[in-house]
Image (tube, rainbow, N blue to C red; front, side):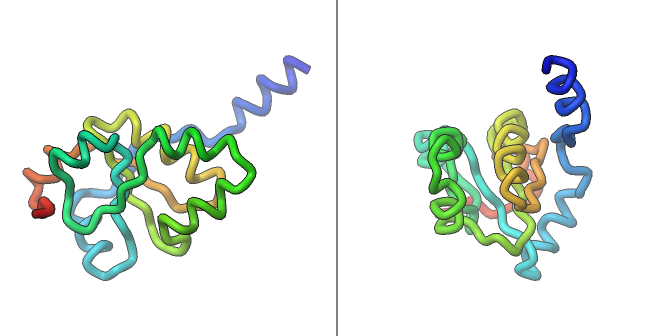
Amino acid sequence: MLLALVLFLSLQDPVEHTKDSLESVKAAMAKKDAVLVDVREQREWDDGHIDGALFVPLSWLREESKGDKFAERLGEKIPSKKILYIHCRSGGRALTAAGLLRKLGYDARPLKAGYEELRKAGFTPAK
């Protein structure tokens, strides 16, 4: 049994930060092919977020993923047919969130760039 588990885990797709440039992220968003998903927590979101980003905190994703209506609840928050660029403060939570979303078939691409880096790269903060 342990050997089967080790083999299964070794075959899993490891989640890594996307290689997509921030310019290509902006372009995909401008064409409406992608959305930005902010997985930071409420206080961080309230302190500032990118205009047009969707707010789906990692804590909510983790909690909801334990329930049997996770896919349905998630479908109410994010589109299923678009690229999801996931961001947090520094990239760590984005990896975790992308892993949860990929299990449900989403094209979730975690960004290494966090909120401040996105702002510096020209993403517009919400007012």
